Every structure is written in C-alpha cells, then in structure tokens.
Length: 280
Length: 248
Image (cartoon, rainbow over all chains, first blue to last red; front, side):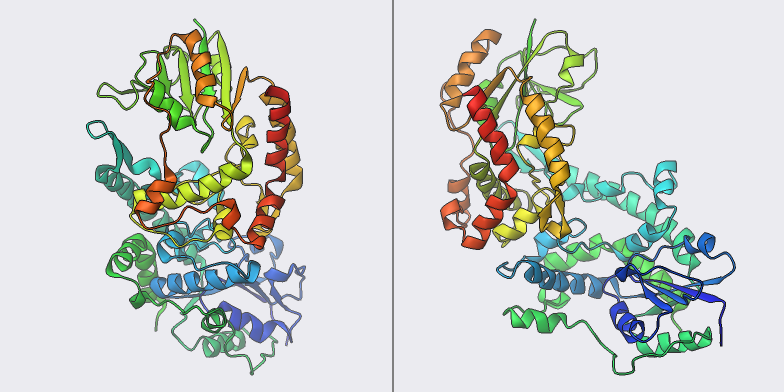
C-alpha cells in the first residue's frame, strides 16, 4: 500500500533513537537515516536522524503529508547518559585517554570534543531551519552562546588590598541571572515555535519500540522492523571494558547534583510541559 | 607621543611584565578588544571603552591588543613576546588545571590528550596557537574530525597571514632569552619605571603542588601524547622558528 505520509523524526541524542533507527533502517530503503548521507526521493517514507531538520521538508516535498514525531527523555537521566557516553567516545578515539571528571565535562558540555552535549530544548531549537533568522531578528536572545559565562574567568575580580584575584559572587549571580533570562526566552520560543510542530512526542521511559512500531502502522508505512533489535547502545558495558563505571546522578555529590538541577532548570521545565501535553 | 602596543599571548611571561610596570601612569592594560584599563589593579583603577577619543596610553599591554591601534592613534609601535610552542602548551595545560582550582575549587582529572584536542574551547581558559594571535582569527578552532585532524588549508592560510603580520611588529622578544631585561630596555624609551623586585609572577608548579597536584612536563608525557603534540603543533613550531631566525 502506497502512503503519502512522510515521517520526520529529529533524533535528539541519548533519547533511545538509535534503537528505533537500527530496528528499521536495514530492511527498508524508504527509511532514510540522515547519518548515512542517503538522498531522499519520492519513495522516502521516514527521515530519521540527529540532523533531520524541522521546517525543511515541506518545500522539498510539497505533495507529501509531513508528520513530525520525536522521543524525549528526562533531562537529568539524559545528561548523565551523555556524560557516560562522552567517555566511551573519547576512549574510542584515543584509547589511552584517562577519565574526565563530571564538573569539567558539565561546564564544557556544549563544546567539548569528541561528543558535544546540548540541552534537549536546545537540540530542537537548532534543528529548526529558521533558528539563525530568529537569533538575528531578536525573536531569540542573541547571546545564547554566552550562557556559560558564570563558569569563565569573567567572574574573577582583583582584590586590591590583598593583591590577589578571587571569585566574585556578585558577578556569578549577575551571569546566572543573565543565563536564566536568555534560557527562559529561548526555551519558550522552542516550546511555541518548534516542538509545537510535532504531531507525536513520546518518552524514553515508555515502551518506545512498541510506541514507534504502532506509529509506523498508524501512518500505513510499508516498513518491516527487525524484531530482534530492541536495544542498542551499551554505554555501561563499554565503560566496564575500560575499567570505568557508569556514573549515575545519585553517585554525584550534593553540590554537583544541585548545580546540575539549576543549570537544567529550563530543560526540565520544557520536558515537563511536553509530558503534560503528550504523556498519556 | 608614540604608543607601544604589546600583544600578550597566554603563557609567554606577559603577566610578569604587567606586574613590573602597571604602577606607571602611562601604562594601560587591555584584556579584551573594546576596553582599556588605566591604573590597572590599583585603588584608582578605571575602565574605558576604546574609541577614537580614548586617551593614547604610552604603553598598552594585554590579550586584547590588536592591529586596531593603527587606527586608534597616530603613532604606534608594536611588540610581543613569543615562547617555544611545546613549552607554552605544556605550561597552558598545567595552568588550566590550576585555573579550574582557583576559579571553580575543583581539582580536575582531565588528561593531557583530552585537554589538548579541546584546548581551544575549554573554559575557564581556552588556548590557541601562538601564530593565530597575528591573524584575523585569533580564537578560531582549527580542528576537524572531532579533534583528530587539523584543517590544513585554513591553518596554512592563517600561517601565511601571521608571517606577513609579524613583520609589522617592531619588537619580537623570546621568553627563553632574558626577556625581562630586554623589555626593560624598550620601556626606557617610554619613560616607564620597572618595579625591580618583580621578576616572576606565576608559579604554576608551586601552586599545583600546594593543592596536591603535579606539574606535568613534556618528559612525563607518554609516546601517544608526544606524538599528538608534535603532529598538531607543527605549524606553530614552524612559525616560532621563522621568528627566531628573523628576530633573534
């Protein structure tokens, strides 16, 4: 049965998408994983991947019924998964690498190589074709890239009396307020203009394989899943091979947990809004 | 009156010079491109936005100095201090660990290779190639492939630009020489009086020891790390050697 539906699945890293991709991509030419640089055609039924854009395919396939769907994960669990996954990627590139402490990784997560970790709402924001235009026009806060200023040496002040530099908490508070202002605005834009494009949002703590299979059937897609694939990434296993353990949120000390919760404040709010709207 | 604008490249001994001269009335510190600090680190410190109307200091020194001074003042000369790139990058790694402690109160466990492939972007203290200072992309990242390789084309373009621009620098000193003395000789022309007791500011090694960490030297790096270092620092070493031959 031929369908006119074209499913677009932006795959936010560390939300379970690799399992769904691997379950479908091998047996189905019409299931296009964007990671593999395969050209789309009129026969394409699913575009799936980290680089799947939001708002792009409408002009490419004007006669298709475009349907957006995605999977989200609890921001704290997701961030811990990213940290652990980061270490496996580093070891893959440089097998002699040492461990990387959580704090250093966390304050640098959006730039650190080989695997950068954006917040969940940031990922969707940057997948929208219009996000650069929104930054330029002031719809988004243009200083989004400065939200980590409170972790830089901008917070230092010279103590004239004692002849030394010190961390100035007034500056830390200032940059934290700035960060919250920027994130509040940009998360709201993501909520109002980006995630609102999704017809289906499901959650990593659901039975995502079953949910995704059902959606493929619901849209009459002519796809055959590989039923043997129900789970893929084994970060904990890869870490163990290198004598490292998977670090969980509860393994962190109180200060780190608190820092993480504060930093992810708007990502948590974004996730909770999505849960209220889509979690059945 | 002539202004001396001094490019301060991270980990080339510049803080010692700043500490030695900051008490002079005509000395200004430029940490970032658009700001000038007078009476730096003194009770009467003031910060000015740099524009055409800003007073012309006798000497301006800092990470924010650029060839913009050509248009900011009628009469400018330039100076800089270079350091052997391997020594500099090892120093920058140790300094990064110290900054993590000083700013964040955290003793980081980051290893050399992870820091090295991320050095241009890790806060609190990003570090770039020395030669990039003399280009229009001083804080750009030259890596590709998740940090495995260098963008050779861009690197070559910037190198050529740096070679062209370093020839516009009037005084190129080398940290390995008696650079404090040589700098003093230049500063006489600008009526600057040195604080003779200040000959060395940062002591990263001692400070790391104090917090229970160890200063990593080149000799302590394993073969993988020295290979990584030598492979990725080629252009910066080439630039340094060019300057040694030309300016020593």
